Every structure is written in C-alpha cells, then in structure tokens.
Amino acid sequence: MECWGRMLRAFLSGPGRRGATWGSAYSSWQPHRPVPGLLNATELVSHWTAIFEKEGIPEAQESSEYIVAHVLGAKTFQSLRPVLWTQPLTPWQLQCIQELSSCRLQRMPVQYILGEWDFQGLSLKMAPPVFIPRPETEELVEWVLEEVAPRPHAVGAQGGPLILEVGCGSGAISLSLLNQLPQSRVIAVDKGEASICLTRENAQRLRLQDRIWIVPLDVTLKGSWAHLLSWGPMDLVVSNPPYVFHQDMEQLAPEILSYEDPAALDGGEKGMDIITHILALAPRLLKDSGSIFLEVDPRHPELVGGWLQSRPDLSLHLVAVRKDFCGRPRFLHIRRSGPQRGCPVHAWPGPQPARVPG
Ligand SMILES: C[S@@+](CC[C@H](N)C(=O)[O-])C[C@H]1O[C@@H](n2cnc3c(N)ncnc32)[C@H](O)[C@@H]1O
Image (cartoon, rainbow, N blue to C red):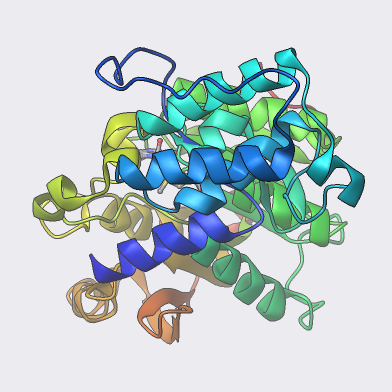
C-alpha cells in the first residue's frame, strides 16, 4: 500500500489530476466566502490550500492549483500567463472555484473534478466510475513501444501490429499505442459499459476511431472472446487488469474507494482472477511468438511465473519483469511459443471488421 500512496501522490502531482461527486458531504464545513473581485488566482490557491490542509485533503496545494488553473483555462498553475496570477477573478470564476473545491473536500479525485487528464501526451476525458489512468501505466506503454518499434517483423497483415487490450477503461493504453504506432490497429475490450462509452468518446475526440474496435466483453465469461477470432491472430495482448488483492481493497484511499469502480481494481483473493483469464485466453488469440504485457502487483511476478509453470499447455513463458518508478517489479512480458491453441493459423476467419462496432 505504500506504493499506492506514492502512486497517488505522483498521480496528483503529474500533468493530470483526480476528483469526487458533487454533493453536500462537507455540510458541517463553513466555507470562507471570498470577496468577489478582490481575490486573485495566487490568493485563491493559498486560500483553498489552507482549507484543504485543515480538512486533511491529500495534495492540498496541487489540488487547489489544478482547480484554479482549470477555471482560468490552463492545465497547470505554472502554465498560466503570469498576468493571470495577480489579476482579480470575476464572481463567476470565484463561484466555479468554490464549487470544484467543494468536490475536492469530498475527496473526489482531481481528474474527475476537472473531467480530463493527460496520459502519454494525450488529453483524455475522465468520468466516474471509469478507472483513472495511473502514472506507472505510462511506463507499461513505454515498454510496449520499446519492444514493438525495433521489431518491424512483429507486425500484422496491414503493416502494423494488431493489439488487443483487455480492460481498456478510459482508453488510455490503447489510444496511446495507436497514437505512437501509426500503423497499428487495436481491439479494446472492457466489461464496463461506462468504460466502453468513454473509450469511444476519447477515440473520437482524438480522431483515432478508424483504427480501434471497442468491444464490450467480459473475459471471464466462457466463450465471450470467440468473436475476437474474426480479426485474425494478434501480435500483442496488453492489459492493466484489476490486480489488487481483495483483502487490500479496504486500505485504498477514499478517493479510490468512493469514486472508482471496484471491479476495475479488485483482482480477487490473490489478485489473479482476471490475470489468469487473460493468460488462458491469450494463446487462442496470439500469433506464434506473440507477446503479452501486463501491469501487476509486486507479488505477481512470482505468482504468475508459478502459475504459468503449472499450465505448460498454454505455451506461455515469462521472459522479462520490469520495475516501476517506485523500484517495485510491476510489469510482465510473457511470450507465446508454438502454434495457436485450438485455432491453427490457416483456420483464422477473415476479413477483419471494417469499422468500430456499435
Ligand atoms: C485497472 S483498470 C485499467 C483501465 C485502463 N486500461 C487503464 O490502465 O487506465 C481495469 C479495467 O478492466 C476492466 N475489467 C474488469 N474486469 C473485466 C473483465 N472480466 N473483462 C473485461 N474487462 C474487465 C475494468 O472495467 C477496468 O476498466
């Protein structure tokens, strides 16, 4: 959980933020009503930082800076035009800041309050309860890019890799890969309707919708993946699955527990429930020598390695483990060897769907 704390801090001090629902959870708290027209942005940041600190809100200063900057039309306080730091705010701006700050007092993640967050240079729309992309997931994306870019042979029939992402959430991983691998195509699946909708919206906002197929799918349901065969053998499977050990769930920060979908986090008793479904499914979909990249808990490299040894029928091998910025082993590269299980190459149905379903 220590790393969750560090993650949350990195989260709240990175190029994006998080937040909670609108409401009156701070009914016992009496706001210091700013005097319209007399306060400027710098004073407002100090004002709300002091209130957040008093109320025990994590990342008090960063939270208030993000909110004030957002209302003034900037991503960060530091990127505001200096003249705006000292210019008196309008009553409307003061009211907006007051309302957004009240959400933060209810522990709403800043990302939800702002309604957007940056990931790998892309501005993504955020909305509860869809999982907010974490900074370490950017490291997973970077690892995938490092592995794919120098391997031009690792590409699909149309010249770029065909990638499956399991559990796309806001679309952060899929859209970053599409953005940085111009010839790639992605199939993004998630069991959550809100995630499917948000990934679609983000794909359209970023004009990446022509190379992504966004499919509602629960990988734990028997045979649910069968229609993915129509896309042909995949080069890569990528996932940041729910991997929190069930008994650790209650220790998560209020920001997470109150606003994010528990189904995006809870990986069952040993955090392996969805991971094992992905590993059992992947050999049916991957091409020979195809790869799986996973973000996991630091206890998982050993657990996953042991589980793979108990399933030699899957022909999957853990080939590398990478540490995150906390120095903890968090990312796995697993490679498939041998022909596709249960679906030989010549039996792949074609052609691929021509447009985003739905
Ligand atoms: C940790 S979140 C990752 C979201 C996104 N990829 C990211 O990194 O920001 C895990 C995602 O897996 C989805 N998920 C959970 N169980 C699933 C299942 N059985 N089948 C498909 N998706 C699932 C959740 O809805 C959630 O969006």
